[in-house]
Image (tube, rainbow, N blue to C red; front, side, top):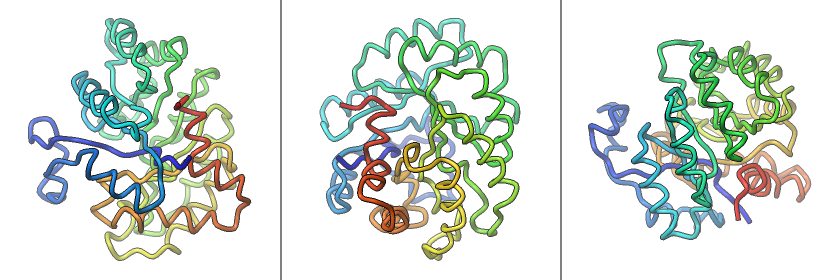
Length: 276
């Protein structure tokens, strides 16, 4: 089964999506399952993992409602307030939902570069393992050293790095990102999503070769058993169409064995998130 391990749905509203500015106004519209279903089918994918785009508990209810009525949505990565004294109650509520598989916090938007190491946040993350929930790490390259320190505190927790931590592909800059990625990959409980790359490249003017140095570094660091493909749809539409975006990875891994390709194209996501 082929799984797109990272995409989003939303009903656009300025108050709930303030990050969608006029600069990216193409995203100022609704993106719902019927829209994605066509793209998945055309690209030969069977299902997806839907990831939160808004940091509210209502976002969880919205995504879980979509997942219940659309079988191809295999899992939901939602949001809970990991810094709240009520985090355990929030986790109890959502961990009982079969398709609620993990949580994410939009760390890249936090003004504190050391946010991941905040005491209250660490207490919240410490709760995830007992609820059998994963954590998606959303960071910029400047956060990677902190991310390594962060994951070192939770050897039993399953983590996945979103969007290969958004290196500066448009500028062709690879260092110190590559060294920091290598350091993070040494923690075997950390996986990585091959996603979100086109928005870090020259919008709509990239070539597949632009991504090769970064994919080479990720493959060397994580191997094939800790990588999973993701589209970052509809955000990817800022810099390419769904099928073209997915082909960046599918073409790159074409020289790998059939088993390794299957791992990256779905099996790793199924195992990591516990998808059925």
